Length: 176
Image (cartoon, helix red, strand yellow):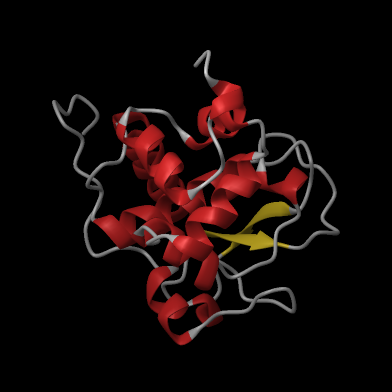
């Protein structure tokens, strides 16, 4: 990393400078000797939020404990929110490929994603629990998610957490 770690003070200007140099949020936190959450807080409080941050911070339908955020269903929904916010611009090919597979699974198998912190671990879904796939019902409409007592779906969120009108386009697409 940087040898001048002790010389840098935590500020939005320093964070943005490191981002321009290609550092990611975890690397910036390491350089500055703080947590990744501290970097996120500084950016949220003092900087401009990205479309992805706005979707995830203002319209993500659940409060997900950190351990349950390290799961495939959470990651795919996070990627979906980013895709809706950006149209896929700036997303990695890997994220776009995984997102298309996620949409295909939900469509082909007639499923929605359900979150409940009390769901036990389920092989192939979440080794930490909290998530499961449920058969789609008429009440689910075209949402990707199951609305339950743990869900807080904003008006804008109701537009976000549904199947997109088009699927991600993969650059140099061999994945069609």
